[in-house]
Image 1 (cartoon, rainbow, N blue to C red):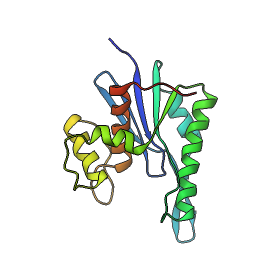
Image 2: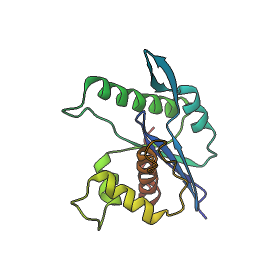
Image 3: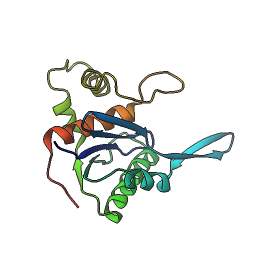
Image 4: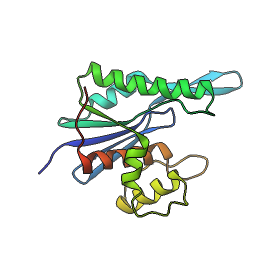
Length: 171
């Protein structure tokens, strides 16, 4: 029996991390710290909690992280924040000598969305596919809207892709 943990990561501030080992599934929101900024709060990555989470996953483990790149139309701060999270996760993998695979979004989505209505947007197709494959998955829900956390849903899709394809690892 394969005892490997397949871990998917959506690296954004509102991303998530999902772990599949055998039939056990864990889903976590990306660890963040909320700091006071003016009248509101700003979220920043909690690198210590991110490292602790990665290091707490028992071997054997392979991490699958969604490749990040700038997109036309996205603001500079948004592109920077996404790239920052991607770099933090990659640095944690390198520092801990953890095997990982970089997966373009279209690669795992095309695999996950097979047979689904292409008129739906990508987020809706991923939610449908994940809900169908993992009806009892412990996906956190949003405090405001009560909907499944999109970052965790994507992370579970990425983990499933890793488990079903077992791509080559990159260090």
